[in-house]
Image (cartoon, rainbow, N blue to C red; front, side, top):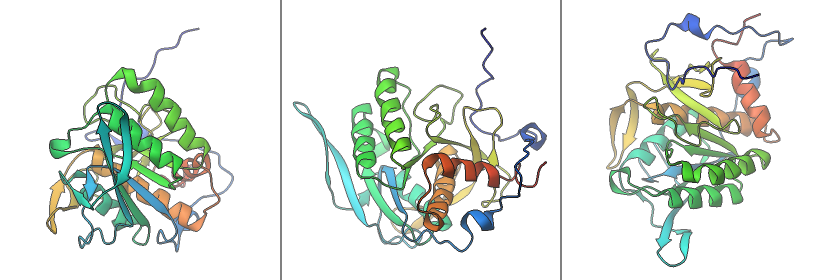
Length: 274
């Protein structure tokens, strides 16, 4: 029997919180303190798959390693070490949000975007494939592609990440369009809310986007040592990536499935319901 899909939801700005009512019969309250209390991100390796990250920025701190996807017309893409830096600011902004949540995590950068956030699907796939193969604990993807020719390969890579304990946190598109990989169930998909509370996140009972995090008027790092106020799902996503780093810092044995469940149980609209 065919059932209608729910309408596509990509953020919760302007929606009534009552729309997110969730009922759970979990036998005991799972609190943030239980899930990550006392953790700082120490020991968790977070990969920022983006436009690069400026090291030493006061809101970013050290960047453990920087790589770039180099495209060759005759032999595809390869990931090579690169001088640290950011070509557009987007990756530095995302890294600063992760750092604000998990101050002692390791940050690694893979540059797949250039000036103006331009980049190819082939570079995105190569960067993600390399990140999964190198077993990062958390991979932040505040980027997506609308091109369906990459869907099957992307789906296989996100499944590999899921089954090999890499938590892939992916941003929903800022417009009501289909893009990937956030539409896949193996990733932790994120849209934005505008409550103004940077420490608050919600579970979405009407997927495909699963969580809403602070993504409106977010103060982020910007290349050159400065800051900006930015809005978008891109900046909500690293909040969730930071919480994943905290969870894995405290509980390094957990799988991606278990981390996603802890996020669900500690979401503001799930915790304390019955």
